[in-house]
Figure 1 (cartoon, rainbow, N blue to C red):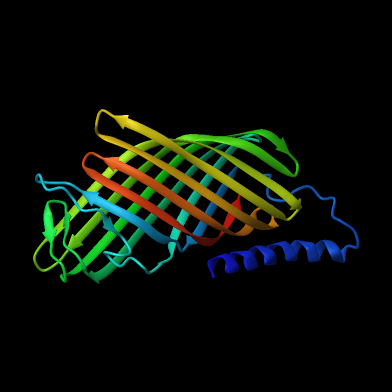
Figure 2: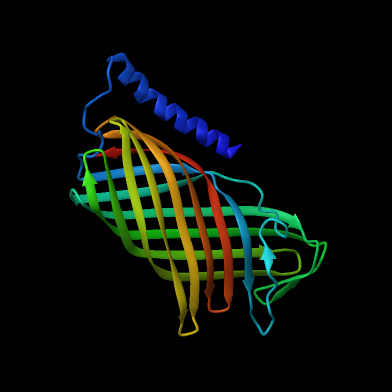
Length: 269
């Protein structure tokens, strides 16, 4: 259903500029709209599903591999806001900031014994759990190919990740908090099949080897989207994004995947 909704949204985005061009009786020769700016502020509303597992060893007790959906019941998909800021001092250069805060809450009855953060939770015990995942991205984009109707560039930056997981019941409670800065590299492209319509693709990630025994991990961030520019200063957009992280910080492990469609808008100055 999410795929069908996204396809429908992109089709609507494509039809609007096409209809406007058709009214003129010939294809538009106008330059791409929305590329003349120094500052862009964007907000999106993202509704991702979560899959994966968490593990926490403590007090000489080896933690269980706890599935977020099967064990803890994280099946609902709440909506979250995502903030993005882009500073463009020159045509081929962009400074980018992005903040993605995610928080999930669930209640479930355990179907097996699990160990988490030094505590044992027995089978048939009702457990309330909360998962918080926050990502701050600071990056630089260089568009080594920049044309009037599109660009192709590379990304480099730093991603700060904060993972918090809590389990509570009548007999035990435990929590873990893990933070780590991770570098990132990637590629980004934008094409304008129509002056008012931008199609975007972005992929970034990195594999961090074990560092002093404290942390290691692999992550990827993939996004495809379309934006209809109402004017050079205002645009509306829709897309699909997937965040995937497999991380170990000291004795805490997380294998997490977030994916879903989003809708948003941007203003430019």
